[in-house]
Image 1 (tube, rainbow, N blue to C red):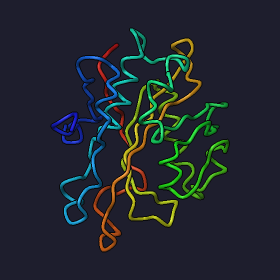
Image 2: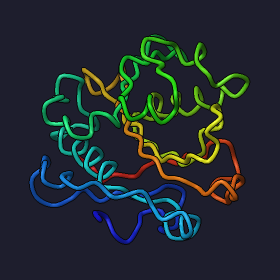
Image 3: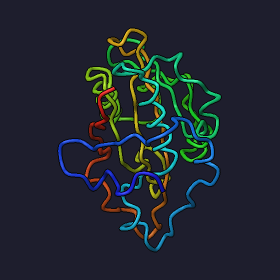
Image 4: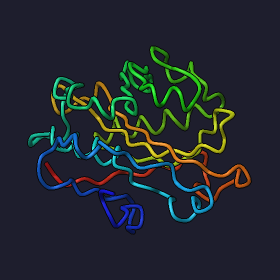
Length: 213
């Protein structure tokens, strides 16, 4: 597993991420993805797991900055992300606090039992809690920095499915965020633990602290 000890164990007002030394793109790292955690130990052993998929994509985003605080959309090559692509989503910043899902990976759609591709955030399944999602996206846009979110899929019937996602800004000029690159990975909670002590809030996001470019 990449990234031990878990960055979730670090104190502070955000979670630190240290990019992996060496080549930014190493397809061999994703040849064997981590298996689903054992249901009997999920609650303690896998809380806040940094999976290979998450580390791979965040490391890729960091490398593509090339001295800037964030990369541009043309810097992101789908061929270089072909293995984690099913776990990736792209969000268009249409105007302040209005976001549209340009792309939703097949793993995300399958796990969440719905495809929001082409939909605005306030048109999807978040319901009365849409403002929580929009506030999270607003932070990425306004701070021009990534966040990490650990939560349950509260808007679906699959309430035993937990996820960790990282949302990273993209900008053509290094100032204005016009898109966001997201990566999401999932882990299971046993059905007898439908109210896991993973997040006290419906979503539980924090700034993701990455080294200066």
